[in-house]
Image (cartoon, rainbow, N blue to C red; front, side):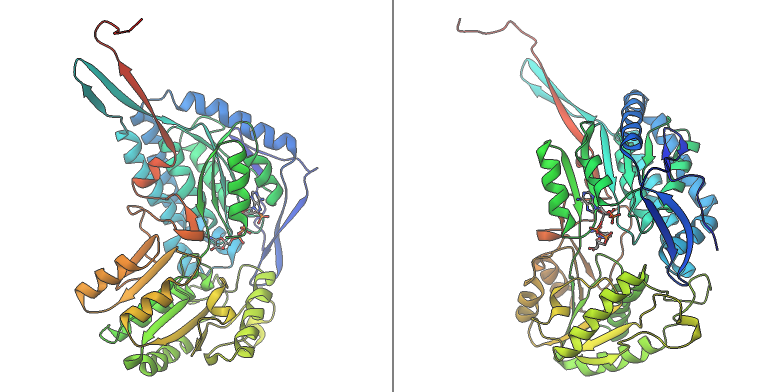
Length: 487
Ligand code: NAP
């Protein structure tokens, strides 16, 4: 199986290579096969990417809003036409099952480009009457934005950053995670094909130090990072050196609260989606599931039954529901958490190890796992695992559940399942999270803002809110009378 791109980087409207860069080996985690070899960006490639982006941005910012909008919309259309091929590539890049990638990755990228295409055409400032004088505001682009991506949603992350950035008149240089270097190249190719000026969306490969070089580049006006809570402060500090704007989409340890009066099947569906989709590698996953004591054992019993029925397998098989983790290193990490859970006294309900059999022998597979009777201090209750591992905790009162749910440095997402309308809203109001779902989980349509509070991040992606993070206001005050002066 091969997925070798034409070259490692897409810069100035074309694929470019510099073999002097460190080798990046792209491995299909279902088989351990090497599917592509690329090179990290050298300082020359980084320079070319940043300068060509600056040139393209100056041109793009002069285009009419409707012309910019048209390019983004065309890019969305091309992505939809090529959804099959893009989804297959996403599956190879990440190991996620085709059943998921066909509906959740390129399509989500296309939605984002389409939605921000509409926004691009309608952006405007305001006019402020000041007696005889008046003022107006102009919404201006920031310049060249740097996007740095994580490995769990390589196409979606590239689009979620590119679409609002470009809609506001910026250019972007994007660095994917070195673990999933392939998909963003396709996004760059498509944006160029849709009619964007050469260099408007460049992709350069590399490890963390390429990200650091982009962040510290003189032409960088903003950095948008999707990554871990460990990387976030480093990138934020580096951006602060140059007074650069930031968006930080980081990790979490999000809670789901299930009350006695909830629909049991819906709550279990929400908890499973929020722990097992993408083999558990989703930042907003609800990995701490608090279940009220009245339904606790019933919840666990039915959850175990449904979890055992999940079809684990080869990601390109359309019947497969869960594939391997992104890499063998990630599997080692998840396994170390499984070990800690058992050692610290959590009750294993289902899963808990590597699936046996020939089909799984060569891949980075792990069973979807549920631990019950987890206490708030256990390692699996405190740290982001990024694997299909759900922790379930019993609780008695609403007040107790809220205080335990909020007792974390993270604040990305939260969920509440209840049939009591007022409780749903009351609890959502008090949960410390950037996004809360009531009787749903992990839905992230482009129309609504997404992002974290506390150590889970800063800024918002998607929704109109994203515009604030990719543009700045200039105020123009117009004097209409004689200048009054005491001198
Ligand atoms: P990561 O290790 O923090 O890496 C994220 C990106 O930052 C990678 O491209 C990485 O490069 C780069 N990087 C590392 N050090 C850097 C530095 N000093 N300067 C600039 N860039 C640097 O995260 P990951 O393991 O790829 O992804 C998993 C994490 O992402 C999880 O914590 C997850 O919760 C989070 N995430 C958050 C969201 C959200 O929207 N909130 C969405 C998805 C994922 P290399 O890895 O290539 O070296």
